[in-house]
Image 1 (tube, one colour):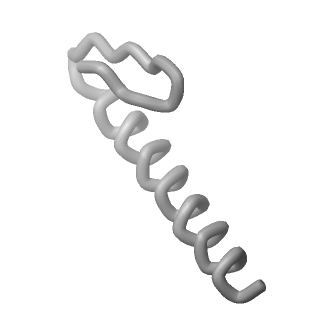
Image 2 (cartoon, helix red, strand yellow):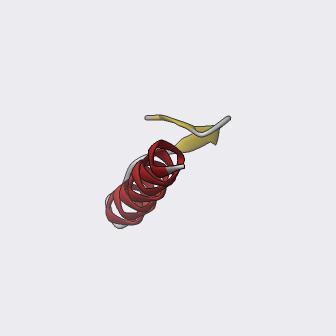
Length: 41
């Protein structure tokens, strides 16, 4: 159970990081394509 909770937390932190990264890159003049959870610059 604890292992599952810790992997869920890691997943949420990863998702937050990706979201912030996209927001930061969005402010720059860059072409961003999001495909299947991967970011292609």
